[in-house]
Figure 1: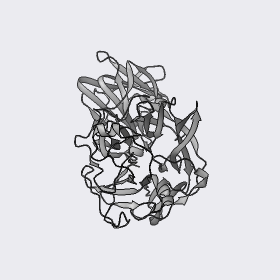
Figure 2 (figure 1 turned 120 degrees about the vertical axis):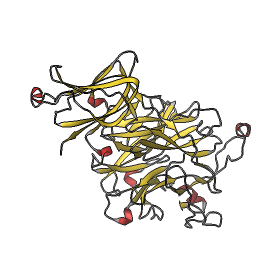
Figure 3 (figure 1 turned 60 degrees about the vertical axis):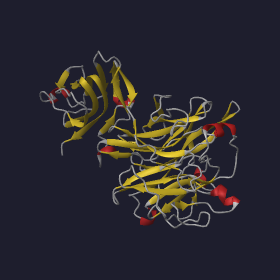
Figure 4 (figure 1 turned 135 degrees about the vertical axis):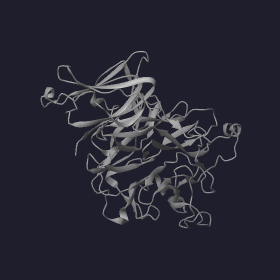
Length: 462
């Protein structure tokens, strides 16, 4: 099992493993937006409006290439060429729209290519990167693939089902492909039917031994319709359970618009797009769950991927995290769809990139830089494992790990770390006093100054 999916990796954002914190507070890891953003925009005639993009990105190890499936409106009004003043003066009204699935590739994840696939007709030509559209008549315009979540499934023995999609067609549906380009027809899933008018997302949940899907439902509260994140599951990707609401905003003002979900470090993480009803802007927050059913927002109201800058900047208006972050040895790549205008108005859309350090979604940082901070875990350490730590340590800072017994006695202390580390093996000053553990796991106490601690791993000797 790879490190990212190992049960031995523990993220400190998971409160189940943190027993006590002193002079330390949970904080989101520093996120860096790529200086070359946006990676691409609405630069093809059929890309009328990226809207929320609903991007799905993987790095295909077999083909050693990045792949992206995204869902623009190929029939819609376009904001291309409009000035900010024109956008404000010309009302954005309801109109006919058709969503499609487009496909792009990249060798480095930075420079992207939109291949001419020759599959789908658009205004008399198949020289485009569209892999799926609804059709040409008005009824099909409403039944095109909406909010498609695409992933590659190595578990399925059937090569014709290697790529899977969860999408809204007439109702919530699934589809299969052997190569991610040529897709079979949608297969309706009436048991799981819901509104589905969002980024539908599905994946294999390793701790549950089943597929889990996320979609949208609506409810009416205080006379206002409210968006809700709904969950469904399936053991075969065909027969799905009834959807159940698992997350919604704290009030009707800030609503959770979509939430791509993935597994990392023993927990399920979600990228919740929060739509502020008053400002009509969207940012992305971090959520976590132990089981994909009970969800918790990490620092509610604080964006993981922010919509900042000045009005008209490429991601000032709306930010929607893409499904499937790409985990590299030296960074986590979070792709996202953005726009330079308000959600329900004229806007141009873009495909962008932000990065985190490994395991850097959130960690504990000292509340007062002049005083040492401590984070004590629940009893997890038996003394037979090697301990590895990921942390950012500023110049002049340090991190020391101590093993603490049942009666708070010190059983071992590490050599101090004085530089930032990723999965760094801890060296003990003396051998851990295994006899004092008395066959009971001990607590780990991280003592640090001018540092942020993100994760630790307990690896048993082979």
